[in-house]
Each structure stands twice: as C-alpha cells, then as structure tokens.
Length: 255
Image 1: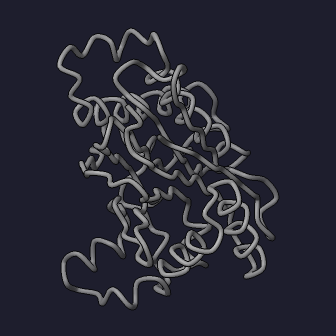
Image 2 (image 1 turned 180 degrees about the horizontal axis):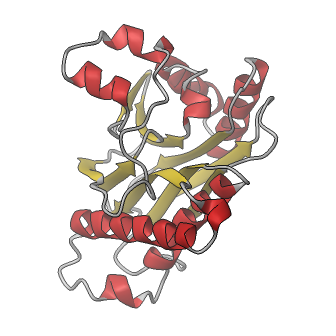
C-alpha cells in the first residue's frame, strides 16, 4: 500500500552531510502501523550536526521498530500523543549526548516524522524540515515550521510571499537539543489512494517550489525516481545546503 523512495546529497558547498533519513514498514515496524518516515537536519560544529540528526533518526527507528516495549506500553495506541512523546524523548537523547562531549555542545536537529496507520496520517515536527501532501497538480505543506519567519507570517506581520527570501528565514525557534523541553507539533490527516507524501529538509524546498513537487510527481510517478530527480534539480540550482528527500506513494489498503 506504500512505496517509498529516498535520496540525500551533501550539495555543492557543504563539506559534509548533516541530514539523516529513514523509513520503516512491515515487518520491521511495530504492529498497528503501516509505515514510519523520518527526516532530520542536524546543526552544530565539529560534525556534531551529523551526530545529532543520526541520534534523532535512530531514536525514531528504535521507538517504532517491531517489538519496542516503549510503544507497546501505550495500550490505546494514541499515535498522535505517542509521536509527541517520542519526539520529546528524542530531544532528551540529543541533550544527553551533547552533555557528554564538549565538542558537541550546542548541537541540535530538526525533525519531521510521518506515521501511517491505514488511511490515517500523523505528522510530527520540530524545526523547519517539512512534510508535504501531493495530490494531482497541488502540493500542500502539512508540517508547521518553527522559525522566526514562519511565526511572523502566521501572526500576519510578514507576507507569505516574502518568507522564502527573507534574510532570517533560517532562524529556528525550536529544535531538538536546543532546550531541556520541547513542544512538537503533531497533526492528523486522512490519506486518499493516489496521494504522495514528501518529507524534505530546507536544502530542497528553498530551491524547489511546491508546484514543482507536483510536476515531478506527475512526470515520473515512481518514488525512487522522483527523489533522485529532485536532488538533481537542487544541485543544478547551486545546492548551498544538504538536500534530503523521502517520498511515499499511498495506494490504499489492499486488504
């Protein structure tokens, strides 16, 4: 019911890749879920960003991997509440790792996670890595950016058209590892067969616009090909940052 394609690249300027991603599906995913998708974008000197994003992704994989006792301990399977709890625990994991090595001081990571249970979709994020729903010729952002610019737009103090080029667009207001506690955004949606999910870091969406996401899906259809092509176009446009794409095609419950 779900076909996933993934790709990542360090881009044209960065010396290393601080992005990290993963996907889980049966039989690796905990019973009750059909798929788990995650993308993280690390930050910090001495390659600490790579460490932070890897910690976050590994935490999500451990939390939702088959047989994980932490998830099994939630009897009602309230996936929205559980996802928020998982991301708060990931925040603590990053904080613990940073406290153990002075070279990792101040490291952190954004994250966006999608849980799919039948036709229900749970999207959780901290920071500005994004999840989009692509339906036909439209792409809709599902996650909510935690950045100064995004908050100004939501408050009506900045035009949405000015946000992509604002000089402070990369100033985050929340990130995993930035404080002892964090409040993730978790939202619930319903999926329709034929729709695609796109998770990505800002290295992609700063260079490729929403309507282009939809065009690439219409043109290439296969998630692995779409992911590769999106990376290619970002690199052709200069890719000053790392670029990561996870794209999933939802075809509905096959019974």
